[in-house]
Length: 254
Image 1 (cartoon, rainbow, N blue to C red):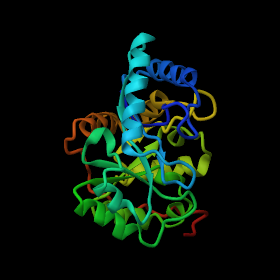
Image 2 (cartoon, rainbow, N blue to C red):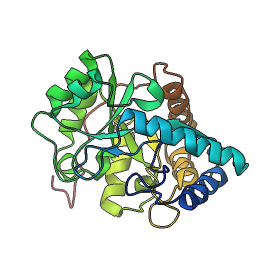
Image 3 (cartoon, rainbow, N blue to C red):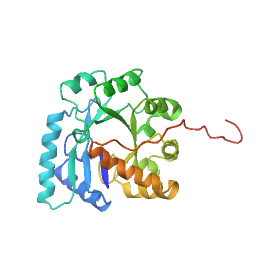
């Protein structure tokens, strides 16, 4: 499997703090059946600044470490960019790093809200030649409250990535439920770990994919697996026509 979202680079954000942490994370990833991982440290989230050149350098160092440690895990460069008004300028100045230098780019919203300018920025990113991937939308309070906003983003060309831990309930039942609604509504295109460590924010990609195969069948299971490979290869990913999340009835009432 390929994990397109991780915080495995040591000492750059709230993920791995030391090389020892990175090694432990790498071993845990391999145990999950992950052979390739994209390192996506935070950028412009108010606390961490990790520009393109710094990430590329750190990925090279980590890759060499894994070779020396005989860990069969390929590390690729990426970045988790908090949406901000300077994104297009940073794309032009090559401070923003797309995923493995492809046309795919992570965009993170604040956990509680969706900025008013989000739709315009997602459009501008596409005009600049990239496909935005909204990360962990299932953990965004505003999207949970009003999923039609996510539907509009996807309808207009954005992709999304759901967290493996969300699918199996590690973030609570409400987030788990919303994650499954996004899968059912064809509003997500990738499942990844967003792993920060081996304890509180681990991998569990194997468990999530098993759940998806059980509940939605082999077609969805293989679609998510293939999409991660297609992303790494800079190819067009599989997409199914999205539809709005249906409001569930509760005691006969909407």
